[in-house]
Image 1 (cartoon, one colour):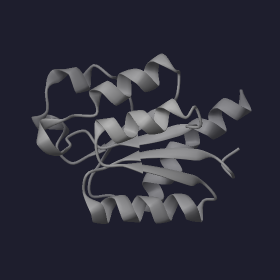
Image 2 (cartoon, helix red, strand yellow):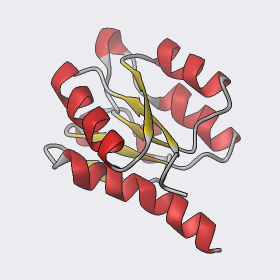
Image 3 (spheres, helix red, strand yellow):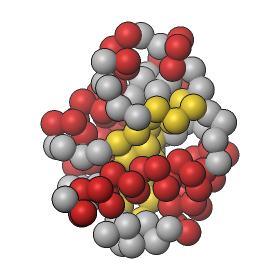
Length: 123
């Protein structure tokens, strides 16, 4: 299933987002990119998301929490990709999902996200 999957990438740093986008494409996925909560929610509304990679702290004081809660509601797996998890509010810690600290090779981040799909398909 990892081929032809659609992956939501929520990241406010342009270079990191671009690296993740390229890594997703190399794995045969269609990346849907967003730099903030509003853009991510619009992508989720399409109903095409299979998995997501979320940066925790975004611009203008936003966090990924509203996006994470919507993904949880829709039972769409995701992971957190952040370098500052210790500095954000405790709400993020209660999400209880896998966290990959920055910096990390984008290919490894995407591969980790795709493991959710592989595990689901194997079940």
